[in-house]
Amino acid sequence: MDGAGTGGEAGGSGDDARTERGSRAARGLRAVVPIVCVLAIVALTAAVGRVWYGAPYGTADPARAAERIQERSQRAYDLLRLPEPVAPAWNFLDRRVCRDRGLRDVTGDPEPGVMAPEHRWGVDGVSEGVARPALDRLRQRLTAQGWEHIHEREARGPGPVETGFRFEDPASGDTLDARWNSARRALFVDVRAPCARVPDALADASRDLFDRAPDGPFPDGTTTGTTTGTQE
Image (cartoon, rainbow, N blue to C red; front, side, top):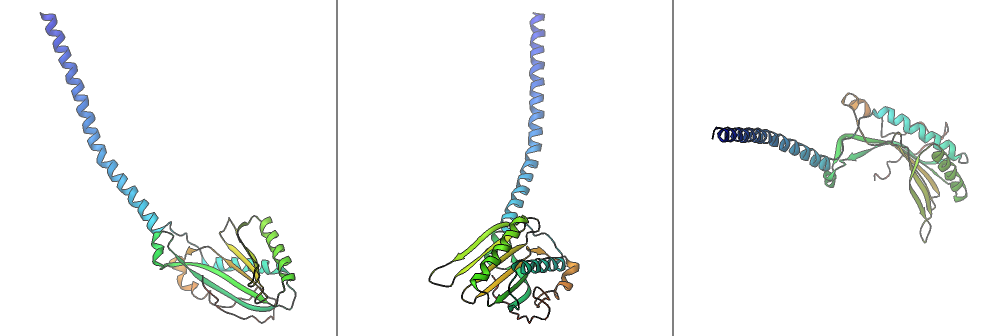
């Protein structure tokens, strides 16, 4: 009788211990669930915000970007080796507006404080026989320097003939667009820096950098026309 009683008491103690452990586990789970829910809500909110607003733009000094793309314009002009004297169609250092990267872009509103510096120039009076070898030289150099070919332009039909390409520098994000059009017998080059946010300390100084005709890429003394062109 006493042995049976002792065994029963031991069994009861084991049940109590298991019950206590189960209670502690339940209390721990109840404490963790709200934390997990909060973290999930935060992650979901961040994900929705990223989809809606898009990835944020990095910051860049617009003066340095403008200097870089003008240097690349000059090298492109030198590589094309167009017969001189050239007849400039236009030469303009400009900045393009940048829009949100996310779904909010459907509104079409520009992102404040974000811009993409661009140098656009063109030369009139270039024949197809001059333009195609010139573009081939530029293409070969860009390829050799590791630029990525992202677009090819070739239109030959009942309308004007157009040929050209677009390359992107993986290191900087700069793009170079070169094309020739038979309607005007003109060769055009656009070099653009990627969109970037202008630091607040440089906002005022950057306003005087653009909307002007720069010194290059044409030889000294060459008259340069200017135009704002079409903003895409």
